[in-house]
Every structure is written in structure tokens, then in C-alpha cells.
Amino acid sequence: MFDSKVKRTLKCMMIGSLIYNIFLIIVSAIVFILISKNKNFNNNETLIYIFKNEISVLIGFVCSIIGLYSMAASLSKAISSNDEKYAKNHIALMRTIRLIVFCVLLIVIINENVFGISGGIMFALAVLGIKAGAYLVPIVEKHLL
Image (tube, rainbow, N blue to C red):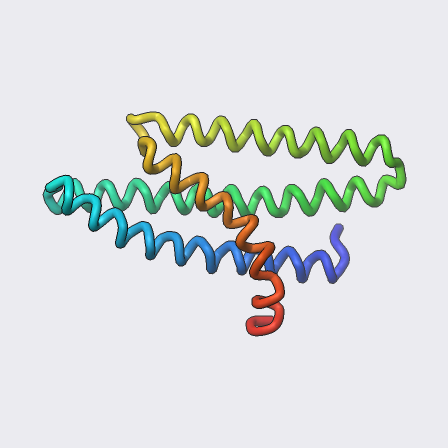
């Protein structure tokens, strides 16, 4: 479905997104430990608070990987169609579907019974791993592949 260059770039973006999300998990754990100390949580409440936010990051990471693959597939399909009108419509449709799915997941995660506002923020930051992955492609290609 993808040529070798697209596969390599997609792999680099996924690795870059993984690096970003690992960094996000470490930094957020430190920040949430500090926040929980200021709120005088006991140890169980602190662990639950951190766990919920780290799960939000992992869900966001999975969504970013799925989003990357979806973008690559829709671009590949649009390019191979050789029809400009179809390509524009297809890319717009897929972008809209991804945005709707992201918004629905964000609303579910922000629900106070699930993860809360901080979980929603962590989810959104994790999904931004797509951007971080794109910026890290040259570094990943040079040092890891």
C-alpha cells in the first residue's frame, strides 16, 4: 500500500511520537507528584491520580499512531486516484472523521467520572505527539535508523 520511503517516514514519525510520549509520561508523573503533595493527597489518591493521567497519555499515544497511519493511508489513496477533486474531497472527509473521533474521545476522557480535566489535557498533549514525531523525523533517521 505504501512505498518504501513513506513506510520509512511513517516509522520514523511513530518512533518520534513514542519518544515524545515517553518524555511526556516522565514529566507529567513528576508534575502530578508535586501537585498531589500540594493538595495533601494520601498515597493511594496520588497513585490513582497519576495512573489516570498516564492512562490518558497512553490513549492519546495510541490515537496519534492510528491518526498517523490514517493520514498516510488517506494521502496515499488520494495521490493514487489521479483525480484532484476526489483527492480534495477524500482528504477533507478523512480529516473531518479524525477530528470528530478526537473530539468525542476528548469529551469522554474529560468526563469527571473517567479522567477529568487533567486527563483531557494529557490526552490532547499526547495526541500532539503527531507533531513532535514529524519534527523528530530527521533525528530519528540519523541516529536510530
